Amino acid sequence: MTTGRSEESVVAAEAPVNEVRLVGRVAKDPEERDLPSGDRVVTLRLVVPRSAPRRSVKAPTVDAIDVACWTGVARRAALRLKENDHTVVEGALRRRFFRTGAAVQSRYEVEATMVRRVTPARTGASTRRPASSGDSSVATAGDSGVATAGKGTIALGRAP
Image (cartoon, rainbow, N blue to C red; front, side, top):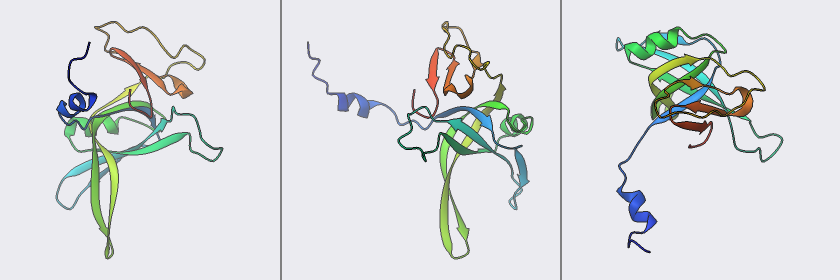
């Protein structure tokens, strides 16, 4: 039975969304900076495993993603992190423009609204577990690139 709606119209009817959820490892201790404007920002780099199969031997197996924490809550949470801590970051993808000499450059980063350290799953442990509808815990799964959170399993490095 056909409803008369095409797949395109269903997708087009959805509201635009810019939401990012990353689960990965902190590459080095976060850094806090005071900007000339008087604002403070804490930056960190999150290493997230890619879950897609490698196309060549030289292809990277991880992505290093820059994260900026502007709110007080996100800054304080980020400053408690240390190198190699497993972390969940939620926020939005932003493109930042800046000048270097006469040239204008840009960089993408995640503007974090939530930062939380998590306990990594044991190596060799099951990478999936059933999640109940009320489950809000987060667990990462080592090098497998799979994390369980809330109501389901999230494959890192690609949309769930």
